[in-house]
Image (tube, rainbow, N blue to C red; front, top):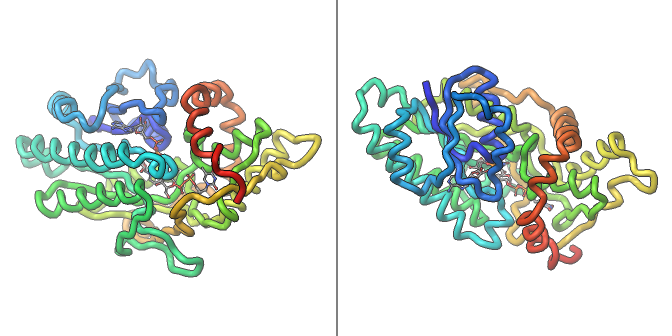
Length: 356
Ligand code: NAD
Ligand code: DAU
């Protein structure tokens, strides 16, 4: 019943692993390179759980992947490991090509040759679930219909292009070799354990430390926000009931402009941490836009709703409230991840941005 999770010390991966154990779903081998985004502290609750085996390693390491497959004979791989931040992909796309494309290729190749040696029943039951993004579909104009699974790929950032390449490889390994693959393409996640380079945690942490809130451009770009635990539920559902070879769009039905999101965070902080002098929204600062910034993402998640009976359970208001509370309640986690290299990233991404 063991599954192999890649990237299970990152934001979504660690939420998924914690949820998996909360469901009593079985043993997990957790393979993670522990880049800046991977954090063993996210998995602290599992430290005495013998069913959670953490392996510090790289998905690009063929021998390691091979030995894990041979030793643990997992029934599935849930593949989260990736370089995930668009701004970092603009500053340095090399790591994105390496991990997101070549890493996925390595996993697919090793799974293919390992599965060939397995009994037909194990081959039939095995699943390779690839976690991908709505960004592979490109950008929508304000009144365009949301992305469907059949929307042609048009990735715009190096990150999105690397994920699109990985999605194509996964598709090809099913089509050519019959690998039992599943893909989920999900919209923007938010919630506990998200590294504060991403919009929501960055704004919460800047606001509570009275730093400027750097909104790119005019703040009119739209994202479709999904609470991370809803994404975890969707992944479990696809793993259990998804049709092999198919992809499923997952979204939150919560389209918001960035300015709406930042104002909502400020309003929650005005309640939880009132600032005597001025509301938190006074910290909003419009800065130079992200190059090639996608205007709008929105997901049509009808397929997963109808075929697999999954819909999100958290509203944006309730999810954001929980998220803000989590960051306020976990100052040690915050202090750990915002030391050292984090400061260098903030300097690199924001110092030369100036005003919009
Ligand atoms: P994250 O950056 O928080 O975590 C990525 C994890 O992968 C980290 O633990 C890191 O150490 C690990 N990792 C990176 N390179 C590795 C390598 N070569 N070998 C092994 N481990 C490696 O990312 P996230 O936000 O949790 O995203 C997880 C997945 O979900 C990614 O594939 C991402 O593309 C996808 N996704 C994310 C979102 C989102 O809003 N965050 C939305 C849709 C899809
Ligand atoms: O859509 C799914 C994707 O969502 C995932 O595939 C990515 O891994 C994940 O990082 C996320 O990408 P985005 O680029 O949409 O997320 P980010 O949090 O970086 O930015 C969200 C929006 O906020 C985007 O329009 C850019 C804007 N932004 C971001 C930052 C960090 C700002 O205005 N200011 C900021 O400082």
